[in-house]
Length: 63
Image (cartoon, rainbow, N blue to C red):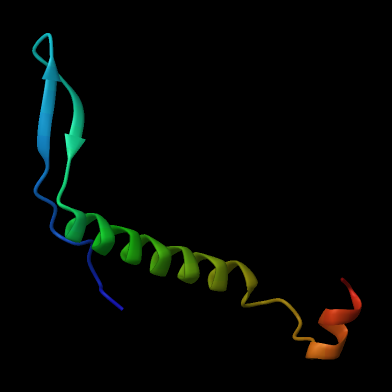
């Protein structure tokens, strides 16, 4: 896992002198999405780490 978010090099689009949008290269976008998915996984794990474990049969019965 990456410990830090990827470096981003945005190009800003301004309207009336104010930044309105940002454009980043697709490779940076893909790195950012991958990083955010990893962060989300860690967050989900932290929320569930104290839950009682169940086996696969019990999990499938609940569906």
